[in-house]
Length: 71
Image (cartoon, rainbow, N blue to C red; front, side, top):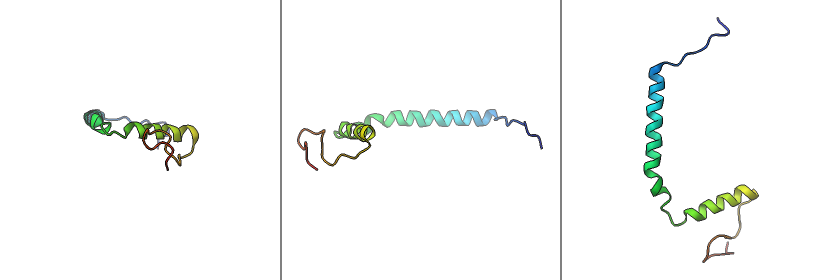
């Protein structure tokens, strides 16, 4: 066996990966507006940032206008 042998990717495999990546990215971009069309999206993003910054899950709601301070 050769110790320093390199595996060369085939052009067909590279093209298939590129096509798959293009379809996945275009599919994600097509559904992105629907993903963020939820009125609670900003609350979820703020909550996620709070969790990442503090390392804790909030026990009360510090972000909403109508439910501020409630569990």
